Structure formats: C-alpha cells, structure tokens
Length: 236
Image (cartoon, rainbow, N blue to C red):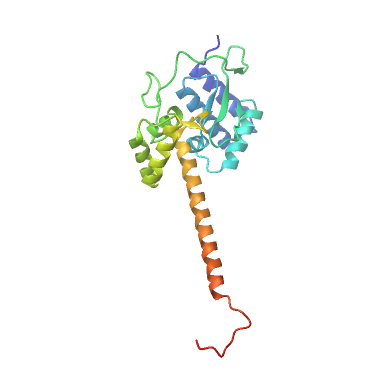
C-alpha cells in the first residue's frame, strides 16, 4: 500500500523544481495550490478542482495561463490533469507521489489514511499559515454539493450583490431537482452553479431588452411611415 509522506514528498518536489529549467514561478505556484487542495482532502486518488478557487490560491489572473501551466505540469510529469471542458464540472487532478525510496514518481492508487494537515490548525512541530483569508468559503466550495438551507443561498447572493428574487428562484429550482443538473448529474459545487445561473439570467435579461428595443424601433418606424400619394388639399 502506497502512502503519502507530506515532508518527503515536498522535499523531493522542491529538489526537482530546482533542477527543472522548464518551470517558472507560475508553474510552482499552481502546483502548490493543487497540492494544498490534495492535502486538505487527505490525499485522495483523484479530486476535482474549481478553476476560480485554484487561480485565487495560486495568484493567477489569466485563464489561458492557468490552462497552459496545468498542461505543462501534466506534460512534465508532476501530475495528471484531466480538463472537464464542462462549466458545471471541475477538472480532475491526479497527483503523482514523490519522495519514495525508489526515487520515482508513483500514481496515487489509494486514499491516504494517516498524516494530513488541517488548513486552520497548525500541526505539532510544523508551522502552517493560512494562505487565504476566506477559508470557510474555500472549504464550502469543495465540500458542499448543496446549501444547508435557503438562508445560506440568500446570504451568498447578497454578498455577490445579486437579486434576492433570483436567489429564491435558484434555490426553489434546484431544491425541486434534488440539486442535480438536468435532474441527472449531481451538483459538485452549488456556489459555482449559482454563478452560472446569474450569468444565464443576465443573458436572458439582455436578450429580452434587445427584443423590446427592436420591437419599439419597428413600431416607431411604422408610425413615421407615409404614403407618396398624400392629398395635401386635405386639412391637417
């Protein structure tokens, strides 16, 4: 059975980083963001990631940079990256294990059952600082497939400065579907689904406004239409 040793793994990876001239600081920052999520979930065989959260952890501001560096880490054999190409489902990551006695990277095949660091409580003998302030939001986005209740949805929408009416519509819709997309696929991250909901709501509102403006313009043109054979002898 293969287990992950936190210290040996990082020590081995940092040694590889120092020797690998293909890497830049963004590659290393992204790898450490993936590693932190992997560690927080107790080193599972594979795990899903939310791109926005990973970019925030890695301090990456460009989506193209994120995808390019993730593919590079895959090609350089630091991890296995499986992009989902689906806005409702996060990409899948399989971290390769380093620091083994053989010195070779191994594919994680079993969940880790021992050492794992809590992101908020320092472990004895190790200093663990919070790399982000909103720890609860990060944890919720990775662990909660659905909100606890409607009030939690309302609070989230208020923080995003979104309509409370849309919050109620969002909650009622997915509560009726069992928090499944299309009634079939289980939602992985309800907050990300809420963001997509608001994007679609904005698109619908813009389309409706455009149609209304087009109808009004057509009506105004009809009102201005005159015939060429007008009798100017008629009184106004």
